[in-house]
Image (cartoon, rainbow, N blue to C red; front, side):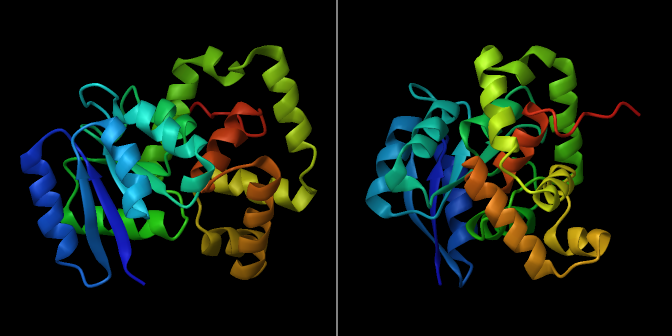
Length: 230
């Protein structure tokens, strides 16, 4: 199956470079280009894109707002957004993940990393490298009030959703929050990767998470996982 990719960046030169790279791969193609967030949302619908490479800083509707719109639209539930950042971990990372992004990638990444990121996102996995996960934790530490977003009612709702998980699903969620793959979790828990995948999918369904990245956010916001200070 060919992965349909939408490019959203206000710099035409960067879009051209990304297009050449993506179109050089046999399993993916660029189906559209957007220079702002509003156009990205519109083209995501029109082109039936699988993955959107989304720049955050764009004129008008920025990438963060566009990601929220895509995540909130039931007709775009299949679309995965990969945020492109100047730095792998910056002030927008946590906001991006909360907005519904599947992950993020530094603009200085190698071409193979970008192509791999597209494949990972299209496959429903979370694009959260160990360094990125540590950065996410650091942001929660730096902004402790954010973990209580939504007030007391929001915390209660998260607790109620957390209570719907089985003990094994919670155990798997903790491992996912640590940035571990299904194979790594399977080895740690001494079960099969297929069993892990089943638990992950059930946890996503119960928690209303789009993908693994959202599971990571939920794990920290609910208090199931506490950031460690080394």
